[in-house]
Length: 228
Image (cartoon, helix red, strand yellow):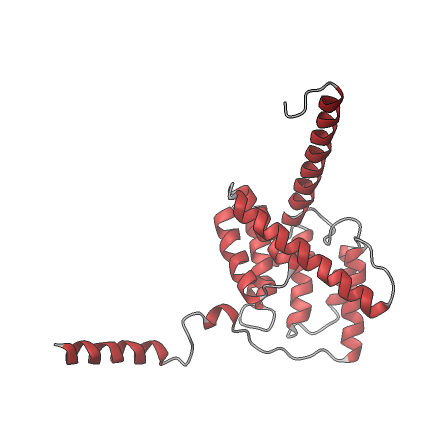
């Protein structure tokens, strides 16, 4: 009997390993991408600058001059289409799955699901994105927003703190590289409100609550009512 159990166990193990991957390998495995040439990099940077300035249509027009077989181009096109509220965004994000930009694809699909109010689907996409790219503060931030929408407050707090510390580390690294002080960037990363915008609101609410609490304590202290 023991021999039979051992044989069955070995068969099961060999079956699991037959595809050459560990059970969790799919969460982090990402394909390769062709590297854009120098001219294409300049065009991508120009499109990024235009999108950050709110010139979404101009950004998209510049991207349309670049080959669609580059995932870096499709990711930027998907982002612009998402910000414009266009349906072309979803298939473009899905085309990134299985490439070196799979995390960005899952992130974008999560943002689209969150915009539809489908927090369950958004959470699934953003959790996969976070497993693929755990140090991306924007992904962690948006996952926190979805947790907040689901009233999972401890999980949301964990993700917000992670995003905040990652952002601070990124700014510190930039400051050390440039030799110049690097302050917080004003506004949000996207030209229109997305899941990240809710985090800004949550932070403002917390800050207001803290200031209100400090003011109440000062008034209570002056009246001899500390702790009430």
